[in-house]
Length: 253
Image 1 (cartoon, rainbow, N blue to C red):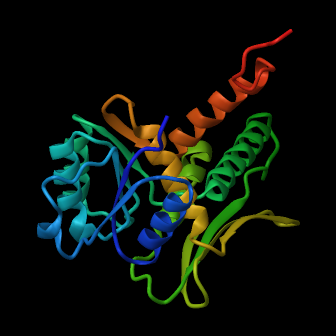
Image 2: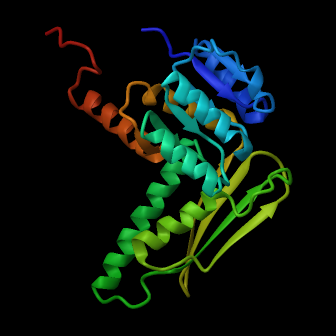
Image 3: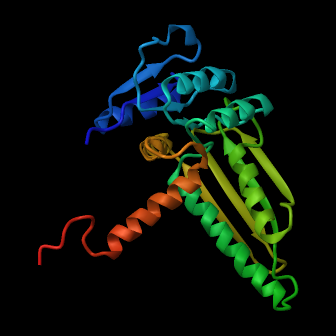
């Protein structure tokens, strides 16, 4: 089966990284300049759209997906009420994957945080005083990123509160240093601390997630999906394939 054709909205660093990796993997690619949506050819034919642009271009990306009837992987962070409304409307017609952080590492970091939350809240329910630590989230991006705190940091804080009932004591933002980003969750007890951190040193990490999410979305039912739900489903599929001992191949015994 041929690789799906991807329409990539965005000519910046992430858009170029997705394009380069997609081409290397055999995907036909159409690169769309978000500054000139009027130049997008009405005959554009793609199987999925990956939006790596900016909030101002979300409207054009949703109109394109609606016209073509194809999924959208929305990678833009810092979306406002209007952009979310547009995405909600589109999700009634096609699959929409919300992916402000596309990396496998962030998915694993979030799962690790959830595990810690489950352990300490279980200890607290058992009567162990002080089991749930004070928690803070710190994120670093280069100075070119204006939005703060990052959507990823906010979601890590939300995940902690959702599973423990306690807000993060602080969400700190740094805008300095090299590309691409660092996110850490600091868990602090009086006598010890634990840090769950994740660093991205290449946009290829995000590009791989974008391409995987786009391929997954093709053929899915309309609706809104998170990138972590996509990883969950892909992982479950891998587990089933590994569990039958055939890796998807017929047993030749």
